[in-house]
Each structure stands twice: as structure tokens, then as C-alpha cells.
Length: 179
Image (cartoon, one colour):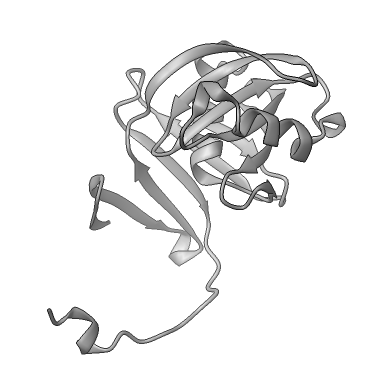
């Protein structure tokens, strides 16, 4: 077990499978609500939830046919979510404990291969609305990673579990910590 302090408070994490996987606690979600949006291109129903950052989640029937960039951008900048906008997730049921996801991320301003808070927001929305009935919820990302999202029934303890790959080694110089 590892604990580290963030602006959101102390976060717990667990190193699993000899360091090949990690399970990290996320902040409890807030501001959950159903949302109906009128866009220039169409109307869309979905759910807003803040899973550490804001997310709009729409349940769709054919995930591969969604124009994530065009529709995601229209939702991201919708007046409902201003001034900062929102991330946008499109999900489709994959089984009683799994969903597939495609995500438009603000800041990137396009589709990304995975988003941890988006997977978490989407898993919670899917569970709350009976799209999946078992947890942990497996979230199949566009990049091929399968994330496991687990939570208690009150959504006070939320955990994201996924694979770990070393992408960088570095050193911090002592001067960085001196004020």
C-alpha cells in the first residue's frame, strides 16, 4: 500500500501483481445529474458527473459509428458546461459487468485512447442506470486497455485498477524543493 497527498487529499494506492498493475483510490464523484442537450447537429441525452474532473456520459447503441471529435466538441463547449467545459464519454454495454468507451478530452480537444476519470465516471453512470449489474465494472478503452472500476454502494470509496508500464525515469534535484 502507498499513500500520497494531492490537492484532493490523501490518496491510497495498491501495487499488485509484482508491480504490473496498480489500484488507485479516486475522489468520490459529485454533481451527478441527467442532462438533455440541444446541439446544432442533434439533441442528446446523457449524464453529468464530476469524477475529479467534469464528464458528460452518453449511452449509445453503436459506439463505432459515433463521430467522437465532432459530437464530443459540440458537447464539450455547450453552454450547459461553461465556463470550463466538460470531457465527453460515449459508452456501449459489453456485458453484465463491462462497457466499451470512447472519450473526447478537453485540453487535448480530440479523442484519446483512454481516460481514467472518464472510465470511472462512465462505470458509475452505467451501474447507476442498470446498464451493467455487476462490479467491478470492466471498461474497455479505445487503446485496448481494460480498466476495472470498483466502488461501494454510496460511491464514497472509488478505485480504478489498470496495468502499469514504465515510460520514464528521471531525477529531481534538491533545489526544486527549496523555497
